[in-house]
Image (cartoon, rainbow, N blue to C red; front, top):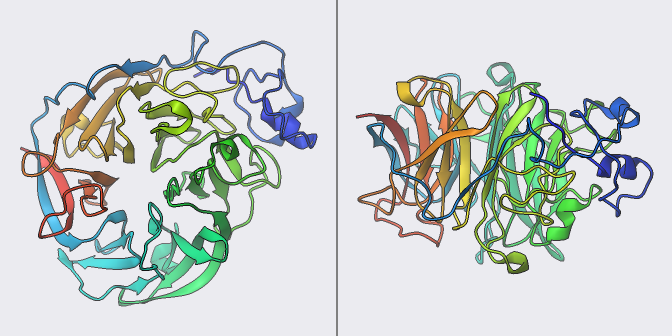
Length: 414
């Protein structure tokens, strides 16, 4: 799909003028490495404004129509506290991060009482930070290595880190292997934390703007970005700018992204939620290497040269949790759909894209708090059994925490 997306910040960064991110230099094709920087045309194009770019659907009221596919949620395990991410081990067991600093093991359908490991979590907490993202090394079956994203206290405030660990053979403990990415500025809000190994076997790391929106447009800052690094922490030579882990900029606080194809991402991002006098406007974007998602310059369906306009946005605050493309077919009508958890709006959202990555339809499932709905939903993932799993986040201080705490749920046909 041809996409005319402006990336004016890249040549400025190379020239040492990164603070002037809105140059009039224009790229008329997706950047495929530093060599393309010199291969720029002068044809103006705004993100989302050209004929081939995806159009943006703004949901003016509510969040969308009720879903029509009959599905139900069944409990896999309960007794968790803010389960943030799941990784499935080769034998079918699950590792689960709890935001309060515990890595848990689910084995044969049972939650093992003793944590696999813990990371320090202060009495006052980290706000939206803590033990967050989780991803297995592609060769986990041989080396038992996995990655976690977590917050830690440091003089002067909160920091975030990606660290690699090795799981014991019996899955009951883990030892540190190496720090992969360190000293990311943190904040009680907007710590992001979602990590995935991409189709290219690179590690992708969502980093929030840490409460400072301007950082999202600074190519030299790591906050407000989707970063791409090697599995050992090095910077890939084919990143948009050599020597920089930046992959996408203009991100506020993504907790969910997946790949439509090896070069095209679908990425959800939190809207302003009161920042800069704006509210709501959470969004779902289609992006490729080097794109600028626009925060804080634009939000919602706004159009600006050099910035990606989303395909879907809401006037009311959603905001998005995890996101996955369901290729499993376990729910036949959902095959190929984008499935996204939501937090404040308390529902599971299904988005169907057409062949040009435009929104064909979208709908709402499990609306509201229990027992009618599921409440706040964080992680969304397809397991090796081709089943769709979600986690609740009702015990994070913003929901109604039930006696059996947060859960991992499996979504199945009725």
